[in-house]
Amino acid sequence: MQKFLRQLERFSQSLQSPLSYLSAAGLLLVVGAALIALGANLLVDNGTIIAQAMGVPESVIALTFVALGTSLPELVTAITSLMKGHSDLSLGNVVGANVFNLVLVTDMPLTSTRLKSLRVRPCSVSTRVWCSSCL
Image 1 (cartoon, rainbow, N blue to C red):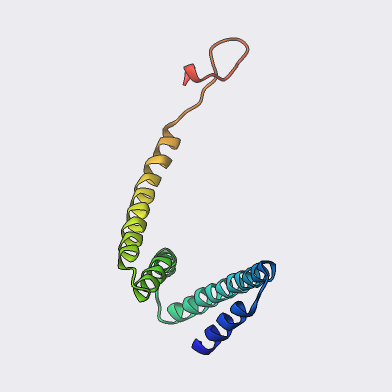
Image 2 (cartoon, helix red, strand yellow):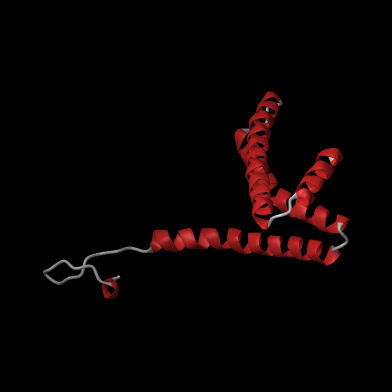
C-alpha cells in the first residue's frame, strides 16, 4: 500500500500544468469513490452473511452497520489527524460529530410526534378553503 501511495505522489508531482493536475485529482477522486462504494458493499454483504450464520438477529445486524457507518468516518479522520500531529483536529472532530448525532437523533422522535399530532381540517366557510387559522 505504501508503494502505491508513493507512486501516486510521484505521479502527481510529475504533472506540470494545473489542468493536468486537476485531471489527475479528478481521476483519483472518482476511483477513490468507486473503491469506497465497492468496499462498503462488500462489507455489508459479507458481514450480513457471517452474522446470519452466527444466528444474530437482523435488527442487531442493521443497527451495527448503522453504527459503523456513522462512526468510521470520524475514526479515520481522528487517526489521520493524529498521524499528522494535529490532535486538536481529532478531538474537535469527535466531539462535534457526537454532538451533531445526539442533536439529530433526539430531535427526530419529537419531529415525528409533532407531525402526527398536527391535524388539518377544512374551514367552516362554504368554499371549503384550507387555512392556518382553523388548525
